[in-house]
Image (tube, rainbow, N blue to C red; front, side, top):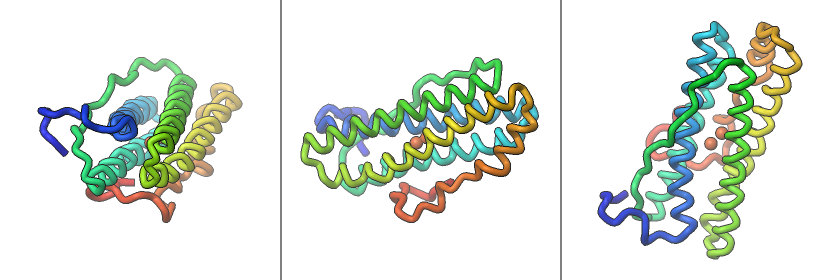
Length: 186
Ligand SMILES: [Fe+2]
Ligand SMILES: [Fe+2]
């Protein structure tokens, strides 16, 4: 970590993108708090619980990258978070937003992997493997949720039942997950 004085300008493209990814992960965490709170407010506790948990997982993703950069003794400035969306009107809006977000993050990790390879940063490339696999699962999960909401056709009790029964997070069970800086929350 560094003071703001030097910024991240001396970093390779791979590390600049990785620092950006900290911002994306914290932004996703923040966004999922907004999504969870919206469901909570609509008295949909299972959907709320699912997204509160997702928010913690996104925070852990950010902190895995922080851990990696610290271990590599990379001089970086911790970024802030981007603006989030809070203006929702239907559960479908939120699931669609989550799916869009996860697809974007998948693209970001694909680009990171390409740049790591271009720069012959094999440690970096190896670090990304868990995230790339994780993104496949997250896109699939959000895609399923969107389909279930569409199929329920307004019956949100069916959606709640599905989420409670079939969308239990298994993220913390993954043995090979990179370590976080500080305690993991999910
Ligand atoms: Fe993430
Ligand atoms: Fe995610």
